[in-house]
Image 1: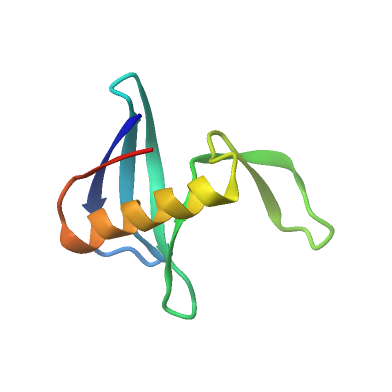
Image 2 (image 1 turned 60 degrees about the horizontal axis):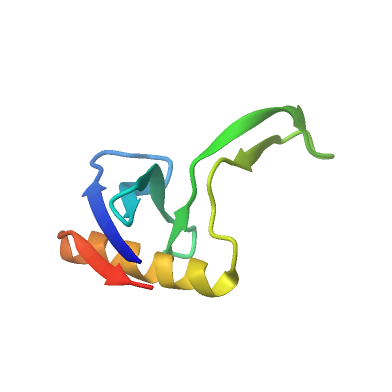
Length: 97
């Protein structure tokens, strides 16, 4: 299946989100608002689209539930690698799985 990735860098963010991505699967299904986030250690990772739950955890922090997500660890690694590559080069990326 062909997977197309388009990323956009964001400016002036103070919450660690450096960019967003849209991933299209086989010209048939798209997932928008995949966040490209910088950790406190300075590493980039992707965060899948999610919604806030009405409940909190045992420490009172808000909880979130992913809307769409990779099912396997292997595919998550492939997807993250390609999304971050697109973000870093500033161009669309296409790959096959």
